[in-house]
Amino acid sequence: SGKVDNRGFELVLKHNNHFASGWRYSLTGSLSWARNRVLAKQISDNHPMYRAILGKPMGTLYGYKAIGLYQTEEQIANSPTAPSGEKRLGDLMYADVNGDGKIDEYDKVPIGWGSVPEIIYGFGFSVGWKSLSLSAMFQGAAHVDAMLSGEGVLPFAQGSSRGNLLSNITDRWTEANPRQDVFYPRLSIGNMNMNYEASTWWLKSTSYLRLKNIELSYTLPDRWMKRIHINNARIFIQGVNLLTFSKFKLWDVELGDGRGAKYPNIGSVSLGINFNF
Image 1 (cartoon, rainbow, N blue to C red):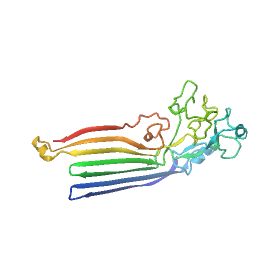
Image 2: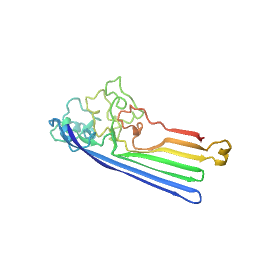
Image 3: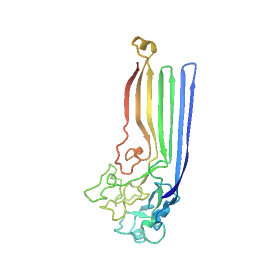
């Protein structure tokens, strides 16, 4: 029913070295990039959303361009009309993309990469001296974002008795706090004022760099192990998901979800010993 062009590359580099003094090290790095483009789609092109899909990657996010919050009654009076609802100070302003004097589905445009990363990369190292070794691996993703939606993050969108309130709920527009850089626009019941529509306001980058694994280990001397008929033994302390660098702070950035409704990755520290008989 359609045609998609998909292309990309994957690059992996590794380097190892050993020294007579007992030192050794290894370095590794990987980078993958993939992009697709819809060439043809057997579907009605009467709606602008369908036309916009052509030439764009599958999964591209669409929505309104948010251009700020209403700060004056004059801005409201001179703004494009909306399908429903009463606009008030602190509500979201949207760009009238096609210039027809109203905000509707025809003003939605591509605004995000989507929840599948276009770039995935990683790098790590291992360094050792005789029986002691330290290794670490980092993982990252870029060209990826999430559209915040649902009751888990948008309060009162489904009514006054439903909707989660996050700890940042105080970071919202009020008459006493009329900032343009708040997290939430004016709070209201339901979505009649279009504040909760998919838009650049709720689009958040979920690019990240995470320390996936770090381990410090010591291999016990062979002369000790032979006495108890063990080939080798290794003591280790290992950390998983200990550090994450990302602008996205609401929940686990690696979930690829705009609702916060998935179980997060767990950070852990383990201490153990491996025996090989």
